[in-house]
Amino acid sequence: HARSASTAPAVKLNSVGKDDVAHFSNILAPTSIVSSLSTAPATEDELDQYNSDWIGRFKGQSTTVLKPKTTEEVSQILKWCNEKRIGVCPQGGNTGLVGGSVPIKDEVVLSLSNMNKIRSFDPISGVLVADAGCILQTLTDYVAPHHHIMPIDLGAKGSCQIGGNVSTNAGGLRLLRYGSLHGTVLGVEVVLPDGTILDQLTTLRKDNTGYDIKQLFIGAEGTLGVVTAVSILTPPAPQASNNVILALPSFKNVLPLFQTVKRELSEILSAFEFIDRTAYDLAVKHGQGRALTEEEVEGAECFVLVETSGGRREHDEEKLNDLLENLLTADEPLINTGVLAQNPAQFSSLWALREGVTEAVSKEGKAYKYDISIPLSSFQEVVDSTREHLRSKGLLHDKAVKAVLGYGHVGDGNLHLNIVADAFLPEIQDALEPYIYEVVQNLRGSVSAEHGIGAMKTHALPYSKSQVSIDLMKKIKNVFDPNGIMNPGKVLE
Ligand code: FAD
Ligand code: 2HG
Ligand code: ZN
Image 1 (tube, rainbow, N blue to C red):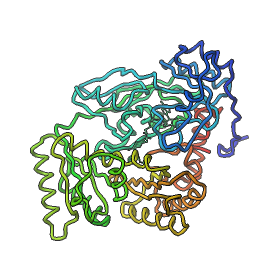
Image 2 (cartoon, helix red, strand yellow; image 1 turned 135 degrees about the vertical axis):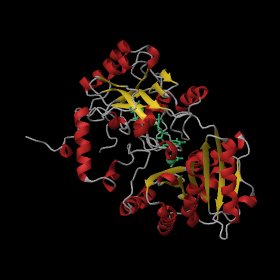
Image 3 (tube, rainbow, N blue to C red; image 1 turned 60 degrees about the horizontal axis):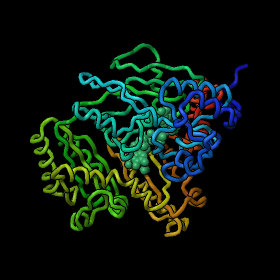
């Protein structure tokens, strides 16, 4: 009797018991177990960092964190959990922004932080093979002396892990130039829920041998298995990089500016990032990067950071200087002014103004985050109309919503709409949803451009995906994880 995947019964999962922890201590070194049920019990404080998410919105009640050192150990853990019907929440750097990396109830947290070895690097092909728990910044530093860079970069680089990046299909600041992880990840090693090791750690650029199963794990958010290693193509480092912050009198100028910049810089354009005035002010208020002068920011409604990366410094600088001059001397200038980095410290400082917005927002208050793909022309309108909507509900004041801001990856059509509040309050949540998701749906956009679904957006999936797609996703989940132990309550309700 065929049963529709969409009507599959919710799986009943079991809590971890002392016997389970005793079993894990046969698999793992004592230092790899943090548990309130072990013979050397962990305190709530020790467990807290694994139970709490980065934005301070989600909190699990896991009693047991396992930190395996090898793929074989991961395999034995999952085999046991599958047999005992114990839920498992894989955790990388715990920097995810949708509540996917912390348990919903008391699932075991499987932390990849002890799996942090670089397995190989081929300087000819640029292919890097690394354990999933390697921190992104460590990998960047590792390939740098070989004159390579990672194809991905993001504000959380000092904490996030390559396995977490792959599992969220993170986008970030280099997507415009190097494309998504669906293109740059060449292979993965994954432990399936029953303990089977799937070795697809190929380093081949081309491999058209049927279904490309690795793609399913890119963005699966730990719901199909545990990624234990990744093979990834690292591009040659550009010989020269430069950046400039452009101050714009109006958001209306962003799109014509994008067109002009693409035309003039062509192959050396490597990032085109946007922050509105509220985002800029917050970044400065919380010490992210070096503030521009009062004169430079006067009359600016928003800012664009343009980065160039190319093969010859003189050539690139000439192009960038020409662009700036043309912009400033145009009959109707699209920009008020531009601040060009003069040295590596200024280059980093300009980037920090953009990369540091998330950090600044978290210092300002609690953030409702909407990471949406919508047509570029609607970016500002969506930010402004959300602010007005909150005002009309009487929620725009110091004790409720403190700021509504927009920033993001213009080049990728990805807006980060952040609503900063004094606290997470039900009346704010009710004012924002389904309001924002309906706006996104009407624009035929995506409710998650790059952060994933996690626990935060399971209910919002239908605004971007058809029932046919969701049913297929449930069937795929069932094939890999029929007992539903992998990251329960995430991605699919
Ligand atoms: P976690 O947060 O630990 O986990 C994320 C998800 O992946 C969870 O569902 C978890 O269960 C799963 N997971 C983790 N590791 C594994 C594994 N080995 N196997 C299976 N599942 C696993 N995202 C962007 O896309 N672009 C950005 O520009 C960006 N900037 C950010 C800036 C800041 C300051 C912060 C805090 C976050 C940012 N993010 C960004 C969010 C982004 O998703 C993460 O930072 C990153 O990709 C998650 O990696 P992580 O190791 O922290 O994973
Ligand atoms: C970024 O682009 C990140 O800075 C984080 O994706 C966005 O915090 C956010 O909303
Ligand atoms: Zn982003």
